[in-house]
Amino acid sequence: MNTIDMLMRRAAKEPSACLMLLPDAKSAKAINDLKHGLELPPGTMLPDDGEKGPHVTIRFWKTDGRHVDQSMKDFLAQYLDGQVVQAKTTAWEIFGKKRDTLVLVVDSPELTSLQRQIDQHLQRRFDVPRSDFDDYRPHISVAEGLVGTEALPGQSPALDLRLNRWSLTEGHGDGYDEVWSLRAAKWVRNNLRTHLPLHRK
Image (tube, rainbow, N blue to C red; front, side):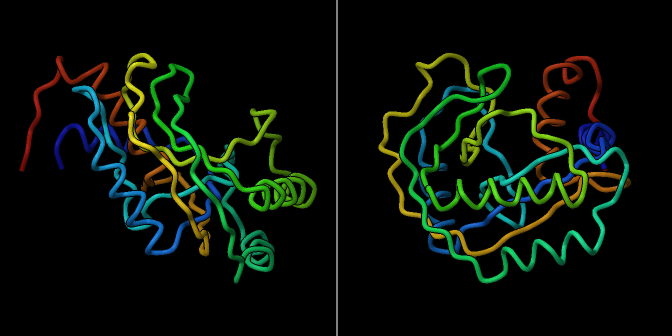
């Protein structure tokens, strides 16, 4: 394991959970083809979405060290197993506290309604903390490290999506997941890359 990987794992241990919807194979391929066909500024990072591929986050929360238990998973399965949500990508936007994350905006009244219902149940039944965001804005993260709105792609982002799978991922303990790995890598790049030698096996 090299130094970057070691620090990514260390930086990714803040206890958290992420509930997401995943597109079917055809939709995922269309998203990836669009993503990898972009002409982006040097230094921009394309997320490695791992085995799950591109996704739309339904809810993200800090767990304060409490594991997601089986009762929550069973409840979510009742809500989400067999669900097929139709959606469209409608625009490129820049998200993030530093305004440096390129996303595909997803439009789906069905998805917005589903998210609202699940969010209410998670708060009431499982004491999940209230979201930091007042409005739910479904999106798919495409790239990080952009600077300025001039970096917005010129290509049309209009895609029809079929979201038919779900995943609940925890980021804690000895492992780390795709939700945190990109953020950790970016932190390492910005703060330590020029100061630490990279030791590779």
